[in-house]
Amino acid sequence: MELISCLTQWDVLKSLSAIASPATIQFIVQSASWIFLAAIVARYGSDASAGYQTAIRLIVFFILPAWGISNAAATLVGQNLGANQPDRAEISVKTIAKYNAILMGGVMCFFFVLAVPLINFFIPPASIAQHDYAVDALRVISSGYILYGVSMVLMQAFNGAGDTRTPTWISFVGFWLLQIPMAWTLAIHFKMGPMGVFIAIPVAESVIAFIYMWFFRKGKWKLVKV
Image (cartoon, rainbow, N blue to C red; front, side, top):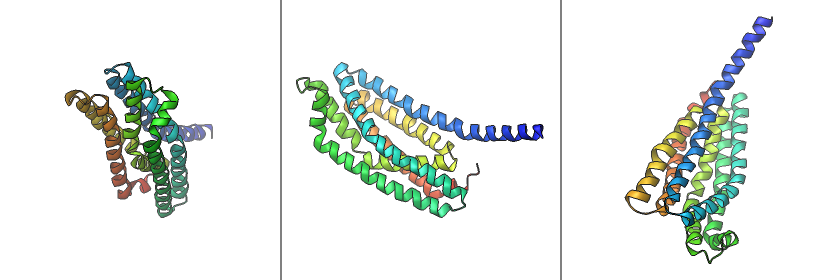
């Protein structure tokens, strides 16, 4: 009996590792890419770096509610697939994605209209260069918010289904093979400076969202066995 129990526990640990390992790499891939973007911006001086970091702090703060909503997708997908209700899982994801997109669209409009007073709260207008970098970063990066909202939900849907490998590969391709090279090319080769980095972020995030949509529609995530 003890041998059977040990074998069973080992099988559970192997299953958990198979799911958790790609999810861990997924987080590292996404987080590390932002370090490289910050390094590119820092090449253009302290004003550019400070303005960019201020905008990023605001962006992350306002993204948190959307992350909370998107986490519901993982829960509902896991629950419905466990109950052999894949169609209901798909409907749940589409519903959550719609509401998340609406929320993020509202935040995007909020940033476009109130970018200047928001940045004024953190950076005095007297620091003209730093202030302008922050306003530009906030407006440009948030322009992709609607698709950010959709991709967040779809990523969590895959994770909830136990398919953590697909989001990991999508993140690697989107961030490391598209976003970082594009940011470097626009900023340095085309001499756009920090604005090149700002533009690369929503472009890459939008491409990532469309890749997620494509894989989601294929429906293989419904067949994953955990």
